[in-house]
Length: 143
Image (cartoon, rainbow, N blue to C red; front, top):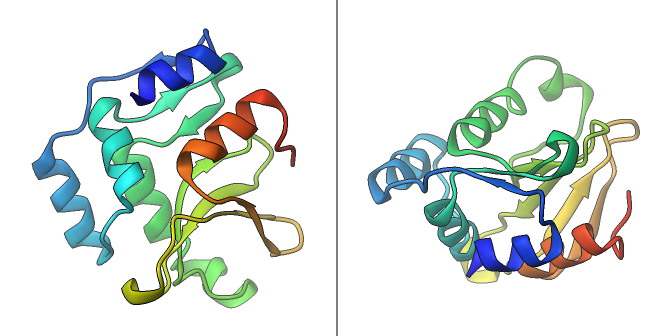
C-alpha cells in the first residue's frame, strides 16, 4: 500500500528492503516507545524511502534510532525544549524534522508535527502519515 501511494506521488522514489518484525521490536525496546501503526507498516514495506534529489521522505530504522538518541543528548537537551514527546521519522531537507507526537498512549493520535530547527517551534502539519506523504509530495504542505 505505502509503495503504491508514494510511487503515485513521487515516481522517482527509492525503496529499500522492508524491516523485519524483530528489527521493529528492537527499535521500540531501545527507544522505549511503541511505534505508530502507520510507521510500522511503512517500515515493513520499505526500511526508509528517498524522494527526488535524495530527500529522505521516511527514515530507516537506524536513522530513527540515531536521531532519537541525538535529540535527547548534548546541546539539544540544554538549548531546546524537550523532545521527549516527539518521535522523529523524516526531515524536510532544510534542517527541519517531521515527528509523531508521542503523548501518553491513551491520548495518542497519529498527528504529524514539524520541528523548526531555527526557532524550536513545533507545528502541526498533518493528521496521519498517509496525509503527510500526500500533502508533502503534492506541495500542499510546505515548510
